[in-house]
Length: 242
Image 1 (cartoon, rainbow, N blue to C red):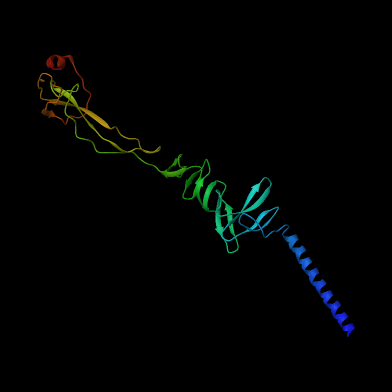
Image 2: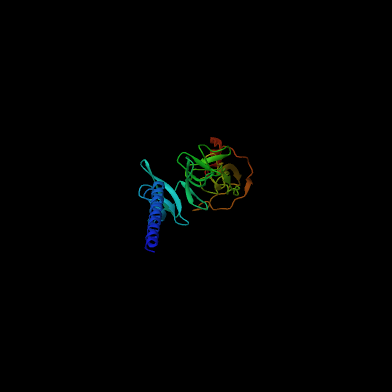
């Protein structure tokens, strides 16, 4: 009876030693695979190490590698930093770097902002814009060329000379128009915004103190635009009204 008890005792003792050695071996294998792995990490890490930082992230956080000198450290962020785009996978959410000419991007094939010296067009970064477009150096994008747009001409002004509408036979009349749309750098230039032509009216003597507000009867307001030439003969014949 005593021999049986002693035998059972040694069998149990040997079994416990075997279990302990197996656990120790498993722990050594895990440490070789993940040195200094810790479950009590800070900053959103699910698992981490003293040397490599985060090894995995808590749910919904993005894993990204940050370079510090020659060393890369894993960090977990709620959103990807500038220059990276986020992709969600079943086992991990990753931040991936944008293309070299892209400052910010939606995915690897669609850039939303280009680096200095490049112009954005349809999600691509180009060093020059395609034909039919021009570079906007403020937004750094390829945009449509804008041509000048002008309004219709205004009616011709009353026939006048030296600011008056009386005391002369020949004067000038003017019409104007507004610029509705100024052109871009490669757009068509704007046309003239004013036009003047000669006109002939029934001469009427100005009343004393008159400032040129008389109504006049114009004989020819449809004369084609031409330069005004005043000769000695006209000056002599128009005295004392010219």
